[in-house]
Every structure is written in structure tokens, then in C-alpha cells.
Length: 345
Image (cartoon, rainbow, N blue to C red; front, top):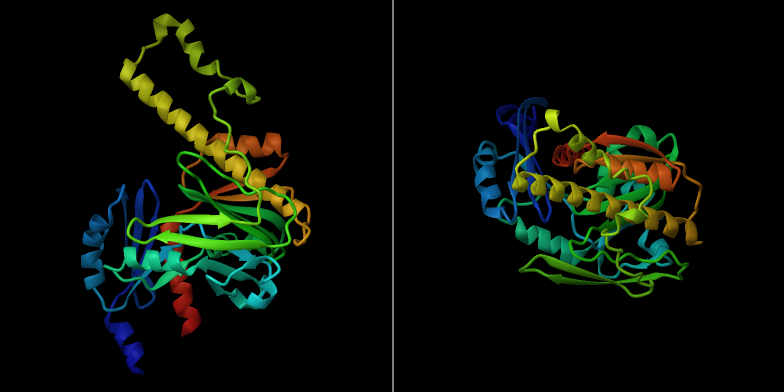
């Protein structure tokens, strides 16, 4: 028996999957003994909780020298292209400041080097072994559908939308867009000769900016104050209960306001996600550089707990068939790390 195999028999393997957003951090810890799942723990932290994350993980990482920490790349400056090499990618984008990876030599993942460096610096206290693209998550999570159909596949995160069109296992188009908290700027779908990317990272604040110099910016998203312009919303449902005074318990005013604000926030984010998906499809169909096969179905990996509004918009406005699967992104990231180790052995 080799030394490496002996060590694996003596120690647990600990896999950690982490996703970070503006709202907080989610983490999953999985412990394996002789290749079999032994224990699993998960935790969520609100806000900027790096210190709390480190304290939570410390005892688990001390459990075994065979521990592996994997992150989801949540930076805006990333994507995927339907080519197998940087040379072929030149007609799509300037990747001179990007790190690239070609899974199986069939398509190209890219991310800004300063962005990756920022993630590694932020989580340097626990050590980072893997940083995975959202498109790698999509490829693994929808492997059964990607290999057999032509469709749009979408990963919904708290702060971003990653969308890719696959046709029987072949990537046709991909786009990653963040959801801004104040204003949302989207790239237009006009036909372009190429995209020039320049990255600007504030390492200390982990704030990032992205210039798309050759893409015409469109106006900020319209406010959602005028709800009359949105079709098929029955705004009277919540008022019907007030006609039955004897059977209705009126909530306290502060509870009612809190519920209304929460509902509006979810509606606002769902509508922004819909617009991101809509603009992604417009870019896909409008740019002659891509093999724009028609897609009528969208498969959504829901990592943020979306409501019914987004599904409704896609079905009613874009006439798409919509299929939704709930995804635990940190657990999926940990599974990707396991796959990487298996493939390397």
C-alpha cells in the first residue's frame, strides 16, 4: 500500500464549500472516511462575517491534514466562451488580464486575475484550494439535461445571474451578470466585433468594477414604482380579506409594513433577474459571432429561494418552458472539489 493511500485510511477527508455575497456567507463542511460520508455541517453568516467563518471552520480543518477549501467565484469579471483556446477567443474578447481554463478543451472559462487574487486574499486565513466558476456548477448540476438537449441553463445566486446555452453538451453562449443593489447597468445586445475587458479591483474593500468598452451601455433599469405597467399582477388579492371583517385579524402596523417591504424586495430582485435573462437572450440572438440556435426551454438552478414571479415572467413574456431545481451551491462546490481530486488521482 502506498504512503498516500495509507494516509487516506488514517485520516478523514474534509471538504469545505463556500459562497459569499453582499448579504452574507454560506458554508458547507463534509467529512468523508474511506470515501464514505461521515458527517456534514452547514452554517450561514450575515453580512461581512469573515472572522466568524474562520472561527467556525477552525476545528473542522484541525480535524485532519486532508482538508480542501473550495470557493465559488462571485466576481463580476468572469465568463465562458464557446472555444477551446485563448487564440480562438481573440475574436470574442481581450483576455490579456484574465486567467483561463479549458474544460476538456471544448470551451473556455475566464476570470480576472485581480479578482481571483482578491478572493484568495480575503479567505487567506483558512487557505483556498479551489475556486470554481458558476458555469462549472451549471455543467455539473444539469449534466443530465446539458448532454441531451438545447436549452438555456441559469444559476441564480443572491447577487448574480449566470446563464449559458448548451446544445447536446456543446456550449453556444454564456454570460455572467451581477445584480447591483442601487442601479443595474446591462450591456446591449448589439452586434460587436469584439469585447475589450479592463479590470479594476480594490483589494482592501473587495470591490470590483468592469468596463465593457466596446459594448453600448443601456439605461438603468426602470423603477418599479408604477406597478400598473406590469401585466398579469393581481394587486387586489391582499385586499380581499379586509371585506370579511369578522374573520380577519388585522396585523400590527409594523408587522404589516415589514411583510410588505420583504415582498416588494423579493419582487424587485425577481424582476431584475428576469431582465438580466432577457438581455442575455437578446445578446445571444443578436450577435452573429455565436451559433444562435433557438431555445424554448430554460432550466433554473435556484440558489437563492426565488418566488413565483420570475417563472411567471419567463413563461408569459418570453413564452419559455421553465423548469426549476433547488440547488445548495456550497454543497455543489464541495462536490466539485471531490471530483477534481478524483480526476487528479
